[in-house]
Length: 240
Image: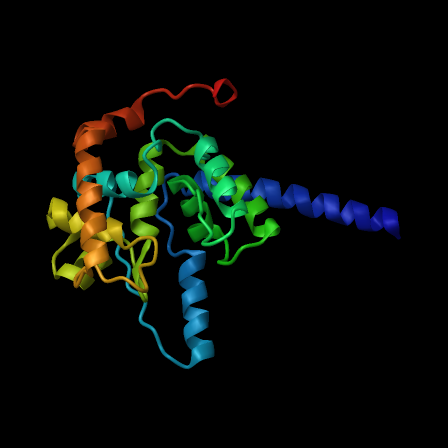
């Protein structure tokens, strides 16, 4: 009985490894039709009895404005071009901060957020975090950095039921994503820590202040020139 159970668990694990590898590999070229977070939001609306109309329109890398790409990197993951999915220094700093009590600080990279949004559920647990590490590793191994950022910008939540840069630009500013200004891009990036609470179209003082900081960071990173580094070879992960 115990041997049969072990055999079943091993077979299930092998199927999971092979299936997840093939899925992530396919999504290197195929636009994801949806995300686990979108499904979660839809289920929440059914449970709450508050219907929600999910909005999302895929836009390719060339259709997404450089200002938004840089704004998100400046806001969420300034080492995006150089790491292999995990910012070890940020993780150590977050752990040290959290051990002191008070508000909980995260240290998720853009790659980790893509893994979570696409494949996993919200909430904090060691199981979810462990699966997130697996999918993050696959994404970094199988996708170029430009693809990771492209999927992120098409999957991020920017308001209730509003997913992706195109839907966000239309929802908050009544324009297409390709027409976003640097200020509008920074406002969208500024609300990402809590897009269901903050409004990029009607920014609070805090959001405006954060957007101003993001624009300064965008300039310090080199603006659109930073994107050239996404194609540069990264150091081997074991050399980090």
